Length: 398
Image (cartoon, rainbow, N blue to C red; front, side):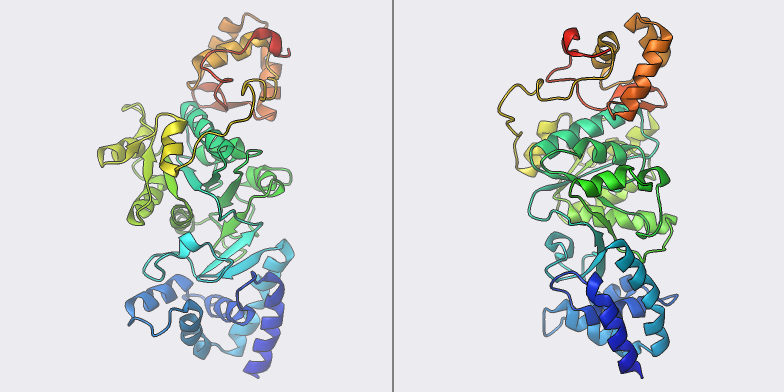
């Protein structure tokens, strides 16, 4: 009876199994972990604590651990997540297999990469990868810096990775969209959960990531919600996938510190953006700097750590940028203040235009992704064209 049910589940796993992984082992691992109080992380810890294997095949060790413990009820219960993954078009890769990122599985099981990695889309694994991480309650300064760094990294061909949260994560993802390197998201929940809701809605950030060749990654079953432990656990995946981690902002309890610690434990460079010592969001990066982290004060610091260089667009980088949707005086005021924010009142004063015209232009600019509003005002999402001064007023529409 068990063999018949196992064969049926294996057949169901065929469409969701990444090339190079064994659908029968995927079926066994899902069936084992679908029950309460069983986790694949616990399996990793058991294998890490055991004697050194005679073979270096992770699959053989996983198989010998989980298969003897399965019963028909486990196998039947596993059909639900398998069908949900299939409906979304996800692929499941097993640690050590070709579809599983080698840098994440390096040193496993003594390092803490997940047993299964579920991907919607294809993760770029053959290019340098940088994780840009930080606070959800980011300042406009932090959002501007994150976008500046991510855009430069992506333009140089590096893949930008983050956790898909609001704040610093979203700024990094959005800035990397459309660049040569692109961007991918490590979710803090299962693929069936719309979180954060604004990013997961149709036409939102996650759809844009997928449309431009990026991936949505998770170790979780499809319907696992974003509980605190689940969200924090994804930080080790972000760190494990990255060649370099940059912490932009974060509090003393920020998940960005967990990402940085994991990256450091793996021997990966950790960079931190210096911040205002009075600001709560500066605690994490300033602590990392005090503990020996490398300062990141401009994109070249990040590119040097990645071992890459700025891309040469073959022309004037300013002319390659899309034209601003803002009136010239509004863009000039924001550009002069960048990367710090301007309050609406101060912006109206410096722009010298009527409130209605300025506010409607700002709304268009936010929809276009040119401007973001933070708790301390409005800031351009990207460094002003080629310099810290505004572009010529004749180049901007009103």
